[in-house]
Length: 424
Image 1: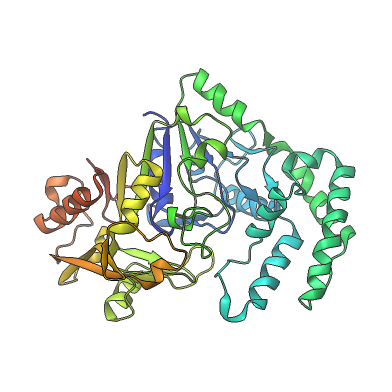
Image 2 (image 1 turned 120 degrees about the vertical axis):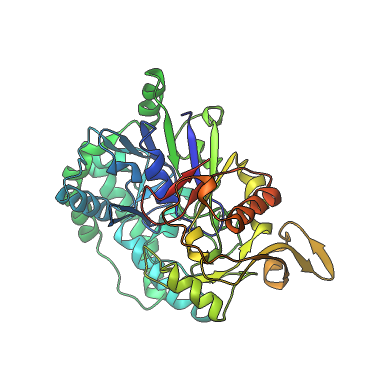
């Protein structure tokens, strides 16, 4: 298989972890290129569930090389906790197959404290951040004052950066009525972890290039979803990084010409965690049905997800932004038992029909979804392993998605387990 990018085509939580895990059997190197431990990828193998926040999902396949790129922000304690949990289950997480770019920025205690303090201060204007310090870490990166993984080889530089950062951060903590942090405490905590982190540091672009030289293929694993992109999402209710496929190149240090196949993960309905506009949201028993049957609770925070009908308007925008070559449709089995299935095919906005999202910042909050209705299905599809085994109504739903997006649905997930997937 050629080099592949996996991205979420909605607001995250589409089931990327399962597809990354599935394709990791066929590709050699898996690279995480953006986000931090505000993402959670859930993989179910043989009934056993694994939730990963930083380490690429390909780690569950022996012999695969997993890389954390420069576009990621890495919490050292979370990374080490994940390695310990995986190692306890017999998974090889040695530096021979798990590596962190030296240019990856590190999330430090003041990032997490500032994230929580700011969100609490916003009262009724909360964004819905996870409080993991992701945004403040990306802020320091953009301000050119961040601590990068490679800095751990220079303790004097680390101390200098922490002391400089806390001049500003402690001023903000006082403003928010929070306790200030000690530079010594932050430094001692980080450098106490450094000996365990240093063996994992590597030249990630060089690793990728060396893999290509040996004829190996690479999978680029995104986090969150397209409409949480800092530039192209439903701003300001977005994450702090670029989640679109183009960032697979910048976030891992390779040329975009190397990206051959871009697979958008699409949930068969729509969900969203936290605040922000959601035109097809269902706040009725159908929404509750989707949440309960789909186990729609955040893998990172445990927060209940908002649920609604499939929205083709945002999907068409995802196709345009990412250049999708394929769709992987997930959680189709959750729709079983609903008498009818609705698809939003357009919006009414100020008396006009829109087929793409409005460009105004709050425009999506003022649209009315326009639906087309398809028959539901009652058959159990969990055991289906071929296209022809699916009921006609299910196939019609999938074909309608293809027609409305112009993209082939190449993967159909009919259950949570790794092998409950139909490949077309």
